[in-house]
Image 1 (cartoon, rainbow, N blue to C red):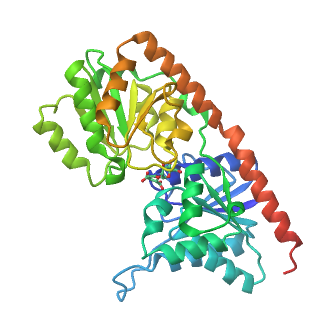
Image 2 (image 1 turned 60 degrees about the vertical axis):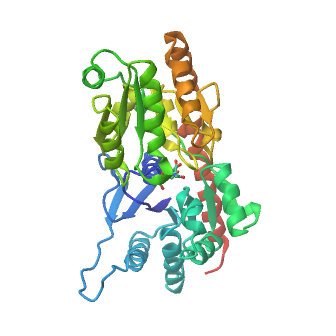
Image 3 (image 1 turned 45 degrees about the vertical axis):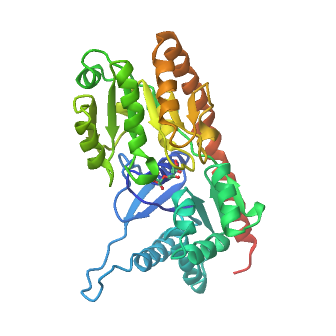
Length: 381
Ligand code: GMT
């Protein structure tokens, strides 16, 4: 099959899922065309049936704001015609789904029938979907897509209640991991740099947006640190990063809180971690938590959104109410206070992550694509 993929090429979970899915499909012999404004962060080395088409913005002086959606739409049309695509799979509703709906209409006028799959990832529904500035467009694009998938049951039910679609419209296909990527040994040098005296390392990885509640990460860590020696490793960047760094310093934890900023591959810091903290306000799935578990790192998280579908409370980590940093710190101390218990949680986290093995999830996407493509072959042009 020749498949077009549209996603955010950045470090966000939706881009990671799209890139890993595209790479796995290419490895199965499909021809994959990524249509994005820069090369997806996790793309790695190019393979013969994996292509990247850049959406280049115009610098026409009249535009105060670039009409990105229109440029993207035109690029989708161009690539679909040039490579005779069988299907277009867009990740994240805004503006990818609405651009795809328009591209499909243009292509139909040129005799090409191109089914669209839209995968909803979270904030496109839970934050932006509620915003009247976007709601009518998202609603239309979801209802016009040939198939819609959601990465958790929680996101599926949020979408159904926000947009009033019927239950059959949205298929639940969870995110996944490729376990072999996580199996290497920890970098002991790096571990020593972060925690020279072998202190436990608590890690948080995110885009440091308010929805991640990074203040709660710090509050949880400080409560743990008051009881035992420990280090907090912060990975990523975003609006709340410098405030958190300043707060850590003002509270006297400058040497214990290490911020390494954005990195391409989060697996290295995960491999040297003992616990992962994800106290988000909401999280449709929590791919970062799944990646931590795949690296044998138990997770302390909030029990919101799709997180309880990923982390089993008391088994692969612990879940607490949003904002309950005391509970989170107690759970962290409970796990860290016994090496045997930590080892048990590590094994359980790893085992849980394997239920999201790509080999289980990939066939669900392939089945969906086959259904849509065979349906479009039956439809007279
Ligand atoms: O978490 C973010 O803000 C990034 C966002 C994205 O679109 O990349 O992540 C969302 O999609 C991920 C992949 O499906 C999910 O694992 C994250 O839980 C989801 N984020 C939220 O719902 C806040």
